Length: 266
Image 1 (cartoon, rainbow, N blue to C red):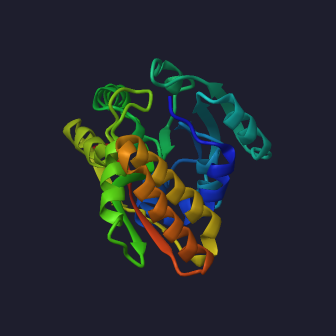
Image 2: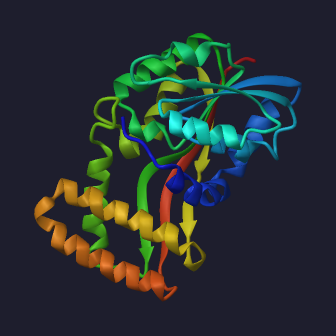
Image 3: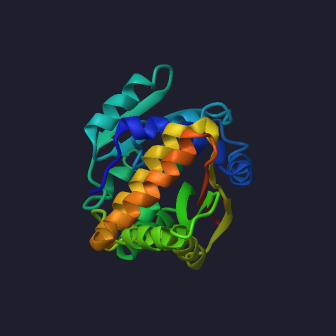
């Protein structure tokens, strides 16, 4: 299963939080307006960023259940969980979904996770969620859109190769990559759920230089795995981008989508 370092997750967390759709969060808050206590299960939880994103804006008494296959990330999450009611479960979701539902959640959440899974896995997951009539909030699912400012002739080739890499196996079978959010929304709607969705794009400028450097380096590496013979050209593209970043002249947008899916009748 593909993973992310705690350093990278910490670097992107402020950008993640700023990108989350206020419209979708508002729908979530309204849905649970009359509930005082909630059990929230966060899948692919990493270091617990979803807790930190929702803590200031959700008034209910929450018990969190964080599930991740990487105990190093869960250990980092424990350091930030003081004052929260949190259960930690180390589990490989590619093989076992049962831990998601023990204890029974009132809400399931995830962030930047669905684009890693296959259609088969997603179908199984949506079925397990909808048969139990559990609301689901997914944030920051990559949707295939990216842009750099200023533009470069190489940007299109890099993006095409990166998006191809996003559809390779990340541990769950052939990944949905940029199609994940729309496929998930379709599956929930076919199961009779009502879905609120909106864009939640990353936007990084000169204030986020190190984030940009690591992000674009990741794009170069992914593109080079798809087209190894083009690695020297991709290296040159990255050198030019890093020079712009160092000069405070580069900006990046990465397209994401948030959605909140709920049973038609509460």
